[in-house]
Image (cartoon, rainbow, N blue to C red; front, side, top):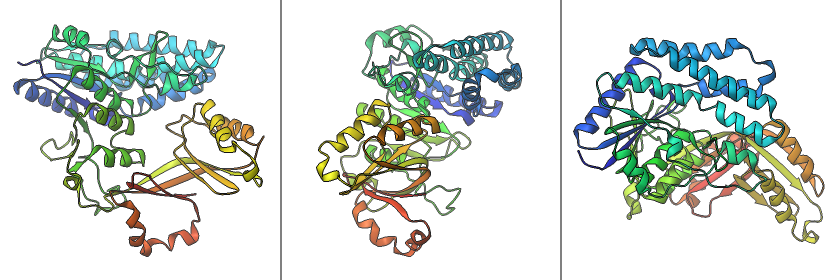
Length: 443
């Protein structure tokens, strides 16, 4: 046994039943036999986080039935795995109760978001504790708390929502952590999605945060690579559910993978790719239902042609976009207008996905999901912007992204499909500065 770590991350569909956990056990045993120390990072069972979020948003109408539904799913999992878990279920129920009480009694946004941040990761905690008991039947294993290893960075005081629900996190190697975890069993399991908030308590790393957790933890441990096991074999040239002829992409460099993730490819989160690139940490994606199938490897390539010969490698659709059309007839006389617009958006703790500007009009596209936006927040932002310009809001839009090196030459090849835009007028056409993406924004 060496001191070299591997990190294996398992998504919501990969922890849902006995068959999946049997495969997790097999993979863990293989990696241990290869001489590695192994850290398993697990998401909540698919659908649990959404159910908890719905409870948090409707806290005044909360019923015990909804809590019981969540506990019942985990009781069924524990029964399937042959482990006793009633004590864990009771502890999870208490965690939910305390978090909901915090949300209900909060007197400010910070308190409410802190309560939500304590509520949502109960699924990860409960899943990993049940999984630990199952794996312990045949393997030496310890459960470790991800809050020990990951701490979020301080945010501007005006960005309360982001600080609790979509926090950034330190990722530099941590020798003290490595030494502490080396004293435990060679196989560890922990929850994804969470990190310690500077003020105490739990903060979240945004939706899809378990992928990010895995990479950040791997970076802290100076691991060889990260394996992300999900229900698809990797990244495709298009959504295979929509385009059966889509091709599996065997290799991608970080820049291409980041553009695809940011453009709507849901297999791996853009924050995960960004963190992996910063640490030069290879990420391998595989299908837990077919572990022998070669998936997608994302890593640094000195020779960019190793990832392809250029042109469009993937077509991604990014739904749930909100578009703000800002019209200012006197824009040439309005010195600092754009700076003011961006300041209003920044002060709301919102990041911009796309922006285009002309002499009288500015178009801004915002990702509703990654920014945790709802209609009320969007309406409040529009109201503030109307102090200086006319605002038209398009709440239900999608971005079609053409991703690949040499994207500038791609427009010449989409002529057969251009008739589509006669019936779906473009709100924006944007080319990325790095020549990796062409974005077409439509209602």
